[in-house]
Image: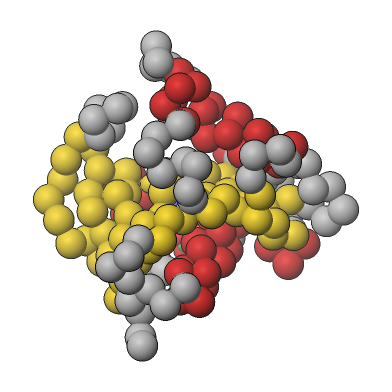
Length: 158
Ligand SMILES: CC(C)(COP(=O)(O)OP(=O)(O)OC[C@H]1O[C@@H](n2cnc3c(N)ncnc32)[C@H](O)[C@@H]1OP(=O)(O)O)[C@@H](O)C(=O)NCCC(=O)NCCS
């Protein structure tokens, strides 16, 4: 059963190593993306993890209870890469993913990015299209999970 939490009733926090919410976000990412794989938790620590910005949404006043999150990584060519977008299953479809995406794109713009890119699971393409992203590459299988993905991008105004 899904629970209703209006997005206005969530708080956004930027988190990192040492924050309880960062570990809860990693738990959620592990559960939704990698739990069935032998390599398991080690897959969370890819080449982007240490340098990325990590965002979580929590209920008001409960900063350790992670409902949704995602991460973003800035590169020198004015590109910002979003990855690992997750919403706790019972809270999906209520605007939380859209709010996380909006805040990551906003951070990309504040860093001067001209382009935001991501590899979308094909099952989530419509979610990113709803936020203005377009498919910009061929479908491919993830090297770690084998799940079909496609490259997408959003051009930001200068
Ligand atoms: C994909 C995911 C992050 C979306 O978050 P969410 O909170 O469920 O999405 P929202 O409620 O914010 O939806 C925002 C918009 O996208 C649309 N949307 C959401 N998921 C969609 C999907 N899978 N396919 C098509 N459209 C979708 C919604 O209808 C909504 O459209 P609207 O603005 O026109 O009403 C979430 O469902 C999730 O964690 N899925 C499992 C993990 C995953 O696949 N992550 C993405 C990896 S690339």
